[in-house]
Image (tube, rainbow, N blue to C red; front, side):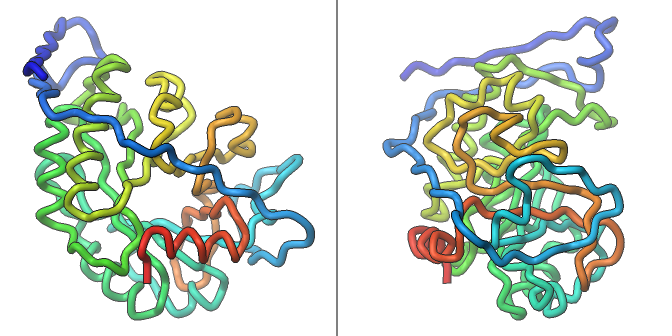
Length: 277
């Protein structure tokens, strides 16, 4: 495949594109995964699920987060101390931990959270927050440099969302470039860790970039004002982030809370299929 370099030039008057001038995208090794991500059968019948407090609870209609028995959280440097044993005993089964951002930022609490969650027998994985003013290849190499290749871990996560508050980069590439850059990162990370990465995203980013085309990957969807079926349509999902203002024993302040798409049996099967121990 021929090398394609795309150089984006921005007008000084365009507010959304301030803070970054050009990025050269290399798509010479972009490939699509060979197998489609399978949809997880949702729980049915009576389900025993943990219940957590919420500072700003949403009035759920239809399927609620309590329809799903497997709950988890995600943390970063803003969760300065976590009692992982208390979190696990309250019903937290898994955690995604921020590791890296862009091509040169490493979360200062990652190492602590990574080790302590493992010691508490909470299934955990690492996530990367994407930065649009560095190439995907640079960012994948940075993630690989900083995140251990731990066979016991959950698959790695690529966090894709617009970041209008970034002081250094307001770049919003077009949808085709976004998807190709994502594939570059995902391919490199999958090759290194041997696990199909998960895509985390928000409703607006999903729609703006037509991420439904990336159907071969498991998705972790943010939807705090409605079930994913309402906000993302029939697109299959593996994890659902349903609040950012939750209350979890062992975590001070607001906490993100997530659910897995299936029941306990499906969770066990999913872990086994991803070689998570």
